[in-house]
Length: 294
Image (tube, rainbow, N blue to C red):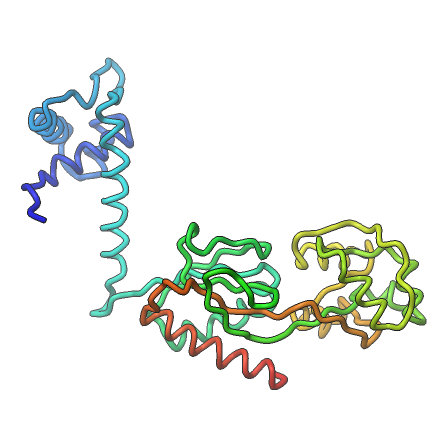
């Protein structure tokens, strides 16, 4: 494609003036005079044959033509700035976009990310969290870490490790629990998966009581509620090992129920980048250590 000569100075002047709705403030940002910004915008208006601003006594009002032009320019300048910022010390920084279940991010990934950064200092991880509902394509993710059975449409899924659930509570409640039956007399904190507490009582070989406790879309929130002494959470001890080690939480019974594993997923149509390949190698190594009893 043969591109026409682009009047970059004029486009930059217009974009800055449109953000500030002021030639004066745009001039301060661009380190030029107000007259220079006004002149560049006028040149652009002459080239396009339209009026981009209406000059008012106290500032500017952007026209419909200006509003049509602004989003493309803003996106283009942002993308150029982002790319230039990736170069540092003779290296180009790569970006890895990662979505993860909040419980996994807080309880397992974040304590280990410093190791990844130390090994690969020119890869910037951009992490977003979710409650297991994620659209990899729509969110522009390289990877998504999910909890489940590994069967997601049009995705490649690599098993990381299982995370069986168990009853967790504060020491004051744990002291009241002499047997698994006693758990049913407490407030049961639960997720939107209705089969989890019944599965735990089945694993304990006792009948499940009516399950009526508060419902959470995140184990992090559920356990935070348990830490307030508001009930017994059913959550993966592996993700809350720091709370257990500190004594803030206790696991009163060695009874577990497994409802899935954590998986590293990506779109089948996504060609792995060098950053993706390095992250895959790293997280596979870390997951193996966890499976071996890290």
